[in-house]
Image (cartoon, rainbow, N blue to C red; front, side):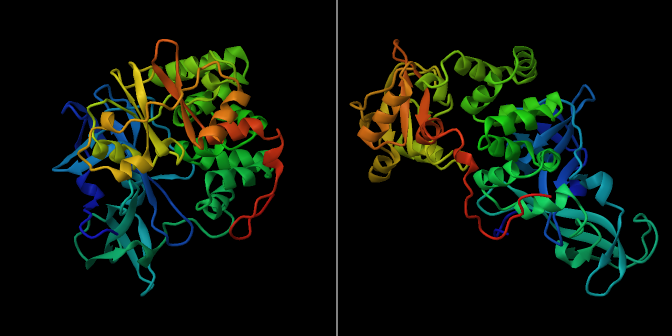
Length: 424
C-alpha cells in the first residue's frame, strides 16, 4: 500500500451521504461490493451500493468515486440509475462479511468479524480490502466479551474462494492478470457454456475490453446470453466505434432495444458512428479523443495524456479545437504529438506548439487512403474532420489493422505467459 493512503473501516461508510461534484446529494451508501479471489489474496472492491431518494438501489463503481472523506463520498456525477443486481462472484461487504465466523491461520482459532478496512492501491484507482477487525471467542459479534484485534486479510481463512471446484470463478482467477487480447484468445477456444460462465463473472469494464478483442461471432454469442440491462451496460463501457460495429451485426429490433437501454449520451455517440460505412474513417473512428481548447497549457495536455484508461494510440496526441470540446467540436485547429509536449515548458499554451500542416482525414475516406496516411506520416492516430472544419473523432492504427488483417487472424495461437487451458 502507498504510504499515507487512507485506510477506511467499512462500518464508518454505512449510511453516509453521496454527493455529486456540485455538492448535491444523490443518495446514501447502503453496502459495498467486493470480488473475492482464490487463496488469501485481498478482495478487490468493485463499488458501492447507493440508495437514491426514490429508494432505488444502484451500483456506483469505485472508478467513479473521486473522494471518501469527512463522512461523505464524492462522485464524478455520472451515475447509472439501473437497479443494482448482485452477480455470482460478488460479495456484499456489510451484508455478507460482517458478523461472520472465520479462522485465524496462525493459531487455528475461530473468530468473529466485526469490521474490515479498505485502502486504495498506489498510483491506481483500484481499492482492496486489506485488514480484518475480529473478536476472539464464541457467540455473536454484538457480545462485548473477548479480545479484539486487527489482522491482515491473509491472516484469516474462511472468506476466499476455494482453490478447486469453483467452476468459472476459479478459471477467472487464473486469467485475472491476462491482457484483454490474451484473455479474448483464451475465451475464443473455450466451449460456449464455459465462455458464457466466464463472461458472466467478469466486471462490465473487463468484459467490454475483452469483447473488443473477440471475433464478431463470439461477441454476438456472449452479448446474446447477457440480460439486456447488463448488455447495455457493457456496450456503454466499450469504445463507441467497437460498440457501433457490434450493434451493426444485430437484428434491427435487438439493436434499437439495446440502444434505448443505454445512457442517452453513449447511445448518441454510437448512433452517429453507425451512420458511416464500416470501412471508412467515420466508421472506424472513436468519438472520444483528447480535445483541448487553444488556451490550455502543455501541463493540461500532459495531465490528460496520463489518463490510464486511454489506449496508447489515443494518448499519443491531443487535438486542439474551438469550443465545444466534445465531438463534433468547434473549428479544428491542429494536432500535437505527446513527444512535442515533453519538449516544451509546462506553462506553454498548446496553441503555440500546434502542428497545423498535418492533413486531417475526411469521414468518408476509405480504408486504403487511411492506411496510406498512417504509412506516410508515421502516425498512430489521425484526426477526422468534416466539411465545416469540426473534429468528429480520431482513427487509431489498431482499428485500421483490425480491418486490414484477414478475417481469421484471431485464430492464430499466441504465446502466453504461463500455461493456459484451452477447454473445459
